[in-house]
Length: 256
Ligand SMILES: Nc1ncnc2c1ncn2[C@@H]1O[C@H](COP(=O)(O)OP(=O)(O)OP(=O)(O)O)[C@@H](O)[C@H]1O
Ligand SMILES: [Mg+2]
Image 1 (cartoon, rainbow, N blue to C red):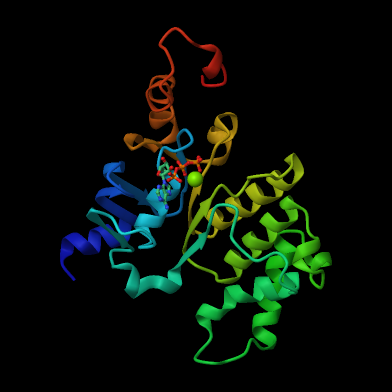
Image 2 (cartoon, protein in one colour; image 1 turned 180 degrees about the vertical axis):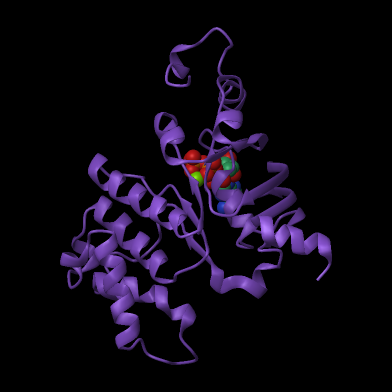
């Protein structure tokens, strides 16, 4: 390993350089550079259609970028796949499929299981611990089709936790959850940070960005700003990202 990549490995959980994506002719991301330090909660914030979900998908190789590349812990994803977890936006599952909460959460252990190994006692214990952490242990044997939206989000969070990655990507983990569930999820994210894990969340609620996130990337096709919240999440940068008129302050009362 070169000394340069060793330094990167030490400092950043994830580095994306010059990512550009177009779905058809339309570019949706332009020359995005992103540096995610280890041990932070980074919020990716921007208006609908800004390319937030696309950015995460491109970094994870789920969408092929036109240009650019991403490294995780100084390595390509293929080398560190087990260390990277992803919770998609309103995660796609066939809700009518007859399966229990516990089984969905157990899917998170599949990555660490060998070829055709069935989850055993250890995996079940990990799944139960994750369900307790997210407050859904009492729902373990319920059919997933019977759950509310907020309960479903917690199931997906538990499934991501059980994989026990070092770097989490969560696309709008608070979508459709009430204030209490939101607090429960935030507590989990901050506990992960205490353990030295890194969390990247796409987050929509500008009012809670400062409370939830240490670092903020404001995105609108390109990176408007990225860094510690106090430097990045400023009125001026928010105005630029959301295309708000300079004299319209009503939108930004909450930013000091
Ligand atoms: N599979 C796709 N095919 C074509 N266009 C797409 C596809 N996925 C997203 N887009 C377009 O790319 C742009 C960025 O979409 P993306 O989902 O990344 O935005 P977002 O910032 O996550 O928005 P939201 O806040 O609504 O989730 C949008 O204009 C969207 O319509
Ligand atoms: Mg999105």
